[in-house]
Image 1 (cartoon, rainbow, N blue to C red):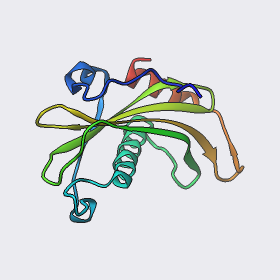
Image 2 (image 1 turned 180 degrees about the vertical axis):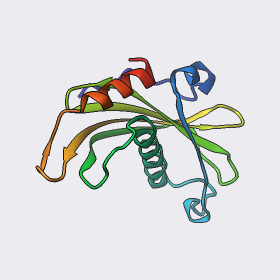
Image 3 (image 1 turned 90 degrees about the vertical axis):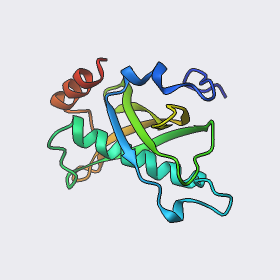
Image 4 (image 1 turned 120 degrees about the horizontal axis):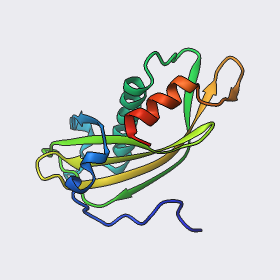
Length: 153
């Protein structure tokens, strides 16, 4: 099966793509995130990426009604390039790579804020879901415009 995204080069420097990402969230590595080998367990990366997704939606789609709508991940693909160690200072950056009618593709990177080394990249497809109607729905025009304006699509 062919990946739906272009190949990612390991250890890509953050400076190469930083100007394309407007949403950056510093991350705190917690004591329990680090395993006995001294590095952040791969399952924790998904929590880091969720922090970026939540901040992105809250920042870009002002007034998002979390009681009425949900955003579901329907596909997620993560690549790991380098270990994250307990003392590392890291952040996650998020942008919309593609905006469809009912779905959008988010590209995210976790990077070391001191060295700018990209540690991991996440590509996910998400859909907007109306909790009252119990179905996926198209993005409202104001959110579509906000995403396009924010990420320069």
